[in-house]
Structure formats: C-alpha cells, structure tokens
Length: 203
Image: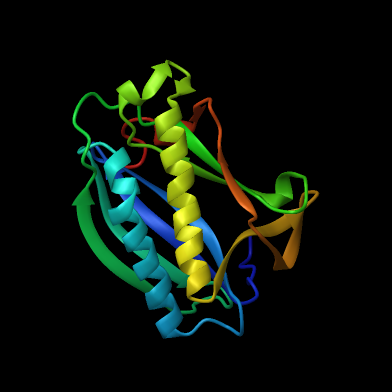
C-alpha cells in the first residue's frame, strides 16, 4: 500500500527481542498544534523510554530486551525520525510464556468499529502471570493498562494526544489517515496469539 500521511502524526514504536526473536509494539500520537518538529520527536521518544523504566520493565522477562524506542514523523514519506537506544532487559525471572501468547491492550475512541480501535500486542510475559493457559492475571492486566495510561498522560502533558490512526475504511484506503483520540485503554483478560511471533519467525 502506498504511504498514507497522518495529519500532525507520529508513530511511537518500542523495539524488542525475546530469546532472539524480534517484535515491536507501536502507538499513534498526534501533536496538538501543528506538524511535529525534531524536538517533538525527541520528547515523544523520551516519554516512551520513561514509561518503560517506570512500569513496563517490571512486567517483562529478563529474556526480553528493549533495544530502542523510535519516534517517526508520519506527516510525509521520508520524514525524519528520532531513535533512543535503550538496550535494557525486563526484570522478571522465571519461565516465560510462549512468545506468540500476547496480552492485548485496546485503545478505545468515541467511535465504534474496527477502524476506531487500537490494539497493542505485548509479548515477553512471565508464565506465572497467567492464571491458566489462556487467562491473564489481574495484576498483569492492571499494570499493562497503567503503563499505556501513564504514557498517555506524559504525552498529553507535553502537548501530544494518543490516537488511533485509521488508514483504511471498509477495505478502501483513507488518505490522509483519520486520527481519533484514545479515551481509555483496556486490557483483555484472554491472551491473544500472533503467528508471526512464533519462535524464530522474527529473527
């Protein structure tokens, strides 16, 4: 699909590797006033790193490495990006869950429908944080929701909104993308699966 611009938009991505398999999770961000500049990209990436340190790091296994946090200007093809190298692992010890067994953080907007919901898949989880093979423990669910909400609050304080970027609707491309503000983050109690995160597929 051809590049679709996001009005005043930035993609914030966390780049991980768990047991050698590479994966990432990305959020959509919009500058409240005007297109993003280099200083905005740096601030957004800094907020991402801070959220890792304060919350997410404590809920991922020591086998999971956060290599970098990347903020990319999505207003035009070939626009700049800012990368913060991190190279830190999670802090949990013990048996990890299979990499494709993911917690799902859902970003809810004021509109309904698949085009207006964001989904972030989180791997690198501890097996003991599941209450059974398919159900996440309440502590994990609460903490992942707190991570996303805390990141949202930090970005908001610096003049940025968390949004869902809809690049197509009813199967047809939408250009520019439609950006809708996220009003709440919810973590599903059931784990989901991404086949491309099976061992060895992301190396």
